[in-house]
Length: 369
Image 1 (cartoon, rainbow, N blue to C red):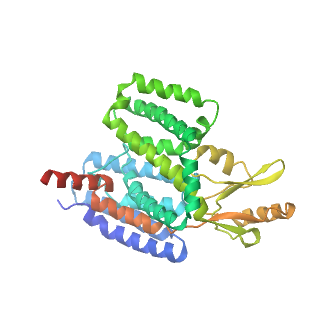
Image 2: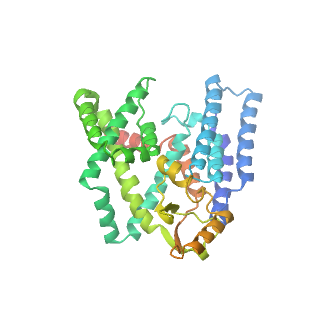
């Protein structure tokens, strides 16, 4: 039987080229291309059934479940302002065009193999931003970000908190018969605001005690599997959540005068009040605490699509009442569709995760040597 991906690949290439072009040129992902991809995928699956091409009940069930989960995840990420509605719909389109049989080398999260696409999308984005941040930031900015990130007390608190929560999550997952570090990392990033609150308050010493108890009484902590996963988690938190975001806020934002703000601009600061005066605070994404208390309960709601005309009107009115309020930091943005296209192609070429593909190549090379 011919690999199903060969039937889906033309649609994937058309979707990727078309949406990358419009996103780069116009900053838009047009719905017609998403509809084309979904219809193309549906027609192919119906054709398989009509011409009695063998498809197991498991394949059909898993495909439907995966797309339902993709839709939910896409909506949640949009609602949390992590991407635009167009990006979420594009993720759904690529998930429909990549048959689940392609994920032979990775299915990190049960019933959600398309999570592999996200990993293959965000890794290149991270590398791109990481190199650009290092290139654009000054030595002084790097030093300040480094000292803030690796302050001994803060670093110890973060490591202890990550240890306790990652151990708890792994124990919870084991009740369902699996151990999943990728899912653990995703959950920890989403709950980062909760973690910040824990190791920055009077509960710090309690966290230290819990971390010590876990280390002493659970020998699983000393296994290579746990240590490997935990080391990756700590590295990602220190590099991405603190050092890179701190530098990124300084190098990938511009101070824009209130009168020069335009609809669609992405704010890098949330506006609140302190003693009846407007106060700006930088936005930390993947932070539920700030999402609830920062973007929803402050001066205006922040959406992934950027500032609206109504937002601009409120900001202008605020600036008139408070003459000292003159500027707002705005994020520099990148077209997301080309990265999504690249991530989808990586998923197809690597038959899953690019990490596991590289690991497979490295293992094969070592065995031959």
